[in-house]
Each structure stands twice: as structure tokens, then as C-alpha cells.
Length: 199
Image (cartoon, rainbow, N blue to C red):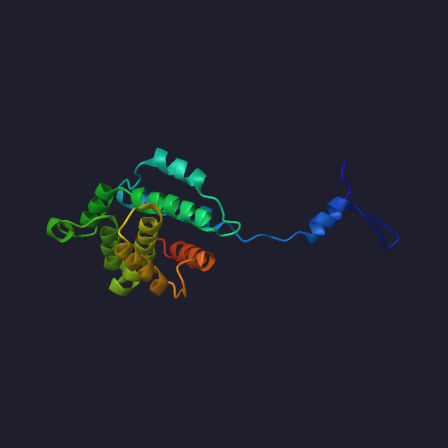
């Protein structure tokens, strides 16, 4: 049995376990897990409230979730792997048909949603409840996440790649695209706080 501290006449006998407990540094919450938790909560709420299933490619999403690791040194390799996985979870792991059904459930017509894809449908849904300005702020990180996935995972002409990178530099006020720690931290904070609010 471990004894952390033994108090005898105002004297404390300290063990290594006691010292470890007293001197531990608490880490920040794992933002990546929180983002996935909020995504799932949003999907469940939509399902309860409207009977619409937003789940899509869940087996593949589960694989991507296991690939997401909290970066240690924020190298391009760590950051790009997480961005590619998070894009799959958040942008590809949502049912476009479910979003269209949700648009119709909140009063949008076929004409209004014709030709819209996932992020634009989501933006329309949020705008209906919260207004255009808030909708743009809520959905913008998903567009940035997609742009980052394109930068890290696609083979593009240098000019096109430079345009994607410049959009990211401007969006996150970076001095250079290789500021991976700042880029990743700002992206995860924005995605985390801007998961669509309850409808």
C-alpha cells in the first residue's frame, strides 16, 4: 500500500509518489478530442431534434480519430497528419444528404440548396438561426481546414499552392506558412469554439 505522506507530530515524511503528485504539471485539455466530442454532440442533437442523421463514413472517421495525436514539436509532419485527419472527420464525415434534409426541415427550398455542398449547406443552416455574420465565423475554420488539407495532401502547381498558403497566412495573421505551432493552435481553437451551435 502506498502512503503519500505520513504525519507525525507536525512532521511530513514524503515519498516519491507524494512528490510526483505535488509537483505534477497539468496539461492542457486535448483540443482534438474536444472537437470530435462537440461534432458528435451536434450530430446527436440534430438527430434528436429533427430525426435527421448527419453521420457519414463513421468507420473511416473512427480510423481518422485514432490517427489524430496531440502534436509534441509541431513539425510539418505532425501538423499535416492531424489536419488531414481532422478534415476527414469534420468536412468529409458529415452527410451532405443529411444537411440538405436539415435545410428543408428549417424551411429552405430545393432551389436555395441546389448546387450547395457540405460547408455551404452548413453555413446556410447556421445563418438561418444565427445570421450571416455568425454563420461565416462558424464555418470559416472548416474552409481553412480544407485549404490546409489541400496544401499538405495535394499535388498542385506552385502558383495555386501559393494562393492557398497566402489565404491561410492572412486568415491566421502568420508571418510565414511554416509557423506550424501558431497555425495549428489557432485553427484548433477556432474549430473548437465554432462547432455549430444547437439549432
